[in-house]
Picture 1 (cartoon, rainbow, N blue to C red):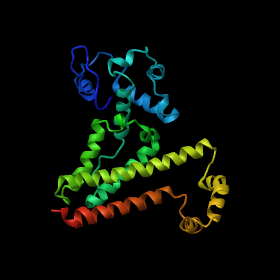
Picture 2 (tube, rainbow, N blue to C red):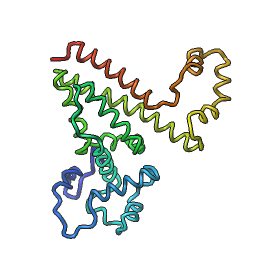
Picture 3 (cartoon, helix red, strand yellow):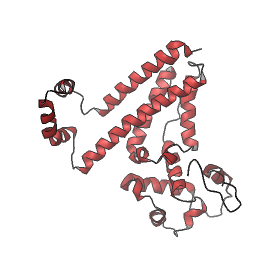
Picture 4 (tube, rainbow, N blue to C red):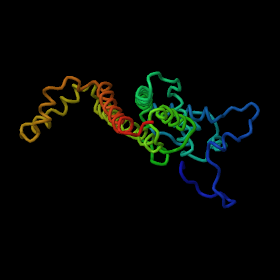
Length: 252
């Protein structure tokens, strides 16, 4: 578990996963490694979803005895933490020129692509979703660091980072759910989805109760441009942060 673990036989809680792994002694001619466990588990989740991650399935795909992985992990929750860390290692660590706006924007776009590659990231339990792993901590470090020159108040910096993170996770969560709906219904495009929903939509609009929705339906030209929708919302969020925390007196 990411936040709290049961006590061991000595009555003390075990050390955190990452502390245990960093302090583990090297094994000669080692076949199984935490990296291999994580890589295999991510491949399973990418192909078959988060529910497919079991210790038995993992052992089968690794080609090892069912208990072999327990040398490194105490169970599925530790495996999920390894997976999250491996996924977040894909985020770019390269500095982005252009100040805090460009830095936050680049990381948000990078995170969207990460979550679309690994849609199981939006389905994690709260315990794993808030797990502190080295690469997740590195992402938080980069986001906070780009704000230090512009925003003096550390609480304001964290509020800004969490606001962008909330937008990214919310927007991408909707996008992933829509993709999964379309895949489950065998629909290949947004147009096909709208055709499938047309009877309900037509009836609702004919009631006359939803004039703003009707104007959107007839006037919008970017209904299927998920990237544009995401970036437009992201830019609005970042502009708002600039006015509140930078232009609003929280800057140095």
